[in-house]
Image 1 (tube, helix red, strand yellow):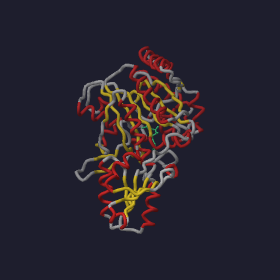
Image 2: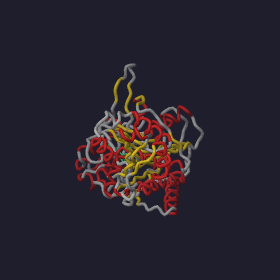
Image 3: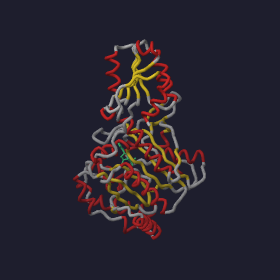
Image 4: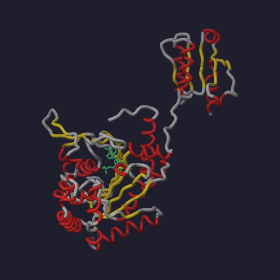
Length: 411
Ligand code: AMP
């Protein structure tokens, strides 16, 4: 878990603002759900998922309730859907910190942030296309170019069940050649073995049966429409038959955006898919859903690698230097802030030299200086601070003209 200081913190905020703009422009509205939920909400994600079985920050609260810090947003949003019964399709976006007790490394943290899209109550393959396209558009808006989209389908629940059985038989036949971790997974949920990045498992994964041979006509048609939709939007993608994603609840479409500059174990910038049964298992009516979560921390690493989306500059415009006790600075900062100028000032009646140093550090374009001479004369000194301002020379103006002077100078 990390502290995010300036200027990186401004970048995080800008990241969410870009996402809010992209999602808002497509009719998505924000949901803010609690960081803490009843443990049961997350257990519905599935009992063969590491996120649930090994990585949850769960504890008993003072009221004896077994609760957990959220490891992801989808389950919370489905819980909110069941609780509030909004009209469908419910198109929402969300953001915030998630918590997973993972082994920290580059691009993998125990507290990390996500931005998220969910659409509940629409089965239409064009919703899948819209959702996938939104993620794609968002990466473009950040300036990322080296992102690859992988898609797959897991079929209808019946197709998936027959496929999982075939996988079980396949892995059982060569059980000894699997890594110990995949041996355990193959017993609980053979599908998840396809997620393994361990070298030892790759041969058996490569020779595994393919979901394409188990798809019902409906599932195949749904997947074909998703592909055609992406093609018509000129969004490039590859079909990856082993893309099952870490969570157990997916059916039909799954997808992942991968960053070309990241190590393969941590190259998923974001991903999602359709989920079935999640709303029902939380006590709601049968409701289709599709969505994605994009990792903020990891996507910013990709931005660094590509040299895009730098931290925005959040400097002030003016820094007030007052060597007469600070009361002048109080009045000047208030009057400038009232007209929307970004102003900072020094405190503790420091020396002129020390206040001017602080003014330089602040990144302000101008210092407004009040010493005892200016105080007596009812004037202030305006001094340009930045190199690009050197053609404006320092000037002394009547204190009463400061507002209009600054309005003009900062225009
Ligand atoms: P998931 O919720 O597992 O589908 O993950 C969606 C995205 O969240 C991933 O593609 C990552 O970008 C991000 N993510 C998941 N787990 C972590 C983590 N431990 N640290 C940083 N980012 C993560």
